[in-house]
Amino acid sequence: MNRIETACEQLSNGIEPPYRLVDQEQIDLAMKEHLLGLGDAAYKNMLRFAAINKIVIPAALKAAAPVAVKSFHIVLKEKIRECKVSYEEMAGLNPVEKFPLIQAALKLPRIEKNWKSLFAVLDQYPDKVKKRLGFVPPLKASQYFDAIVTLRKYIKQEMLSCARTGRPKHMSLTDFKSLLTTYTIFLPSNEDILEAVRSMADDPHRQTPYQNAMAELLFVRLPRLIAELKAVDEKKVWQKLFSKMDGFGLTIAQKIKLRGCYDDYKKRKDIVAALDRVAALAGKMFMDETLRQRFCGCAISLKQTVEFAHGMYKKLFLKSELDQLQRLHVPGIVLKEHRHYSEVLLEKFTTVLTLSFYPCKDYLDICKAFASRDCTYREGFAEKHLLTPEYFSIRIFKGGKWIGNLYMLDYTRQARVLVLDRVQMPREIGSDFLTFFDCLGQA
Image (tube, rainbow, N blue to C red; front, side):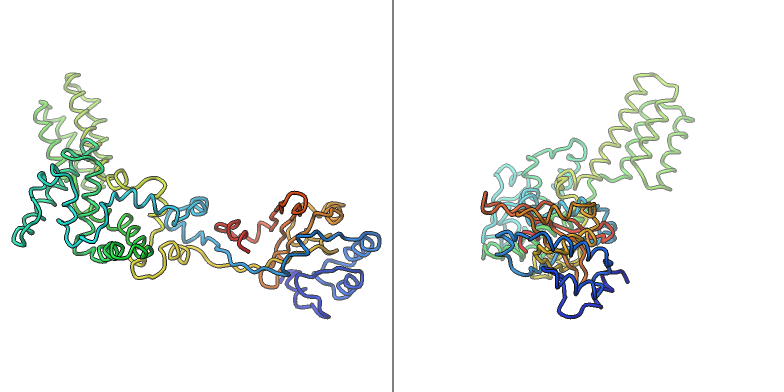
């Protein structure tokens, strides 16, 4: 138990947090009670100062409430570390402000009350896109199954084109992202997302379930679908590479050596590394220089296709500003909650710390460094603060423990400005606050 906590148990005769010692009588009482364990020398110094100096109370302090209590969110570092997010990244996140980025990434078609079926929504697309999809609304019920099969096949083809060239073949990138998003929403497994979208169309004020659903759609359901569709079949990549070996006239020894990369792939399941090794080995083989360049180029091209396919979701939908938010996302839970998804994140990755703030200017300020461990312990610093008419402090308490100070300057009369000069708390407290100053401004 430290000295402050011991002192809290010793308090009597009305001396309680925040320990305002406004005259010599109270200083004497605090010294007799060994308040805060400061020692007699510290209290005698206060008595000497009080005997010859009068404290000027600034107007802002006179008008202030005796105490303000505010809850703060403290980041649970071990929790965010599991998601590979740093404290600095977490501190810079604001899920509510990020929502426009989520909406922009999804490229969702215009939400209307006619969202009764997938094909009613696709009717908003340009005629050339609908023609490419092979249907002209309205569809008969008997045509739905074939139309869905055709649509899924078309999406896979365009994903393959994106993997090879970085863009779809028959439509703009924006239209393709919109198509992929719409198709994902109407999958039977995503009925909860669809319900949230429809509720938004019926009642534009139902923002919370809609925003929760959009976060779930972008961070969970879309990457799941893209992984399921598998734009690039790794087995076919190897088949294509082996056929190229035959076409380039490689010797049997060279083929055996290169096929060793495939054996390594079967063990490690890392096709990108395996294709890198193919290109490196081919580059050292004795063959015609033109053939060597063409074969190495083929291996590198296949590797780039695979890399794009593996990273397709991020390249198409996930901007760098949303990367940390996806890692912190809580799958599924947001759709079962009536709270905003940002509140769910706060509950999982932070804990609440309640602090009390006491505006003060009294003789105990001479020893304020006892709590905040700052440079005002040096001779004369704290006394100069007290002699400054505009100065006052705000003592920070956690429960009954004095843990720090805010140093204030009152220029409200001269310039209508109240200056927060310093926030002083010992490093060993280890409180990793989230949006500390925003919360402080509301206290």
